[in-house]
Image (cartoon, rainbow, N blue to C red; front, side):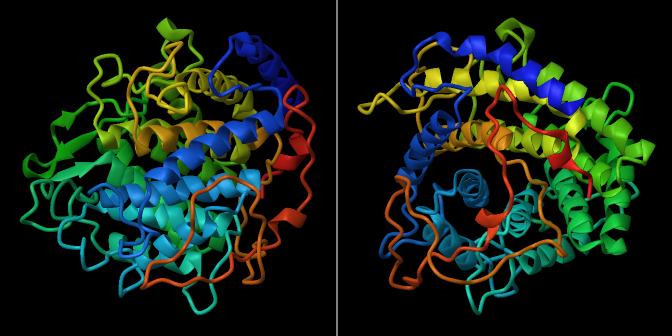
Length: 457
């Protein structure tokens, strides 16, 4: 039973919280988790300058895709905490970067981007749709933006080599054009699965199956459930690049969870894929040498060689695990202890800088490791926010259950940074959307998630 699993999971990890941390996290207390998330979210948004006069909304640190990751993280933060202090900046950036075609191919980046870059923004728009994030009047709906990304990416499906697959980069002059990678194909698979569940449109179901069938022949080993990073279309995808990144697992795992949920748990294919990917994910990225309950980007963290992109991956895996536990509640007893253990570890890492609350990378280390940046803060925000699933655990909305409206101000109780617009932006009031009125029971982590709240829909 899910109820019993969550009780056991909560008490298993509660003992880990006894060691003092700079972020004073009590993993069994909802407000303490919210406070930790607010600190990391404030730190992350302190690096963001796109909402300042003369700056480019949505632009981060020479890596365009990270804007989509930041806003996806902040939309989830808003949903789980009801802190709307960053919403104006998030909405401004999400709309500004949508491009003339409403497909997240803005002219400043369309000549250089990869499919994995573009889909990060499409997935952020999908998150906004599913969580009833407020929409601005006169703007495309969030689901419309997600659908446009899907439309342009599915049109790039390439049958000229490897019997299908999506190329990593879009244009022949790009170095990654010959590669077909998991982040692009898994990202499109996840987007198709989410659109299938949200819209109940068979086209998306068919595409999710097509992308999965190709991926499971080429990139995802259905015996070991190893997810390869990439393959080369130039040799007909016969050789694999097998670097192990958590984000590759995350996109396929949550995509399988959406399809499991959409098919009411009655399709063996999706149950098998979900179980296989989850087990492989937990074994790979929660190493036994760190106790088995703390997440690590194993390919780069121990050697201290993670680049900015790679530092974001743990946050994306945390989000994937969270949504998986919501869509397939039987997985909660495996997932929750690891989300909790990772949050306790992250709180200890958030002890650096002049504030003694700057977050580092190595969640398995007992004190700050000396690293800092928006990527570290995004991942910390994500892992803290993910632990609020024990208190606010409604399944993501579908088109028939969404309550998104454009109305007056939401709450502004947190400590987010300024949301003033640039000269090209707007100073609109932050809207709300009715999500706060939906039933949500706060039982405490020890009581945790009631099975009935996760009825498959």
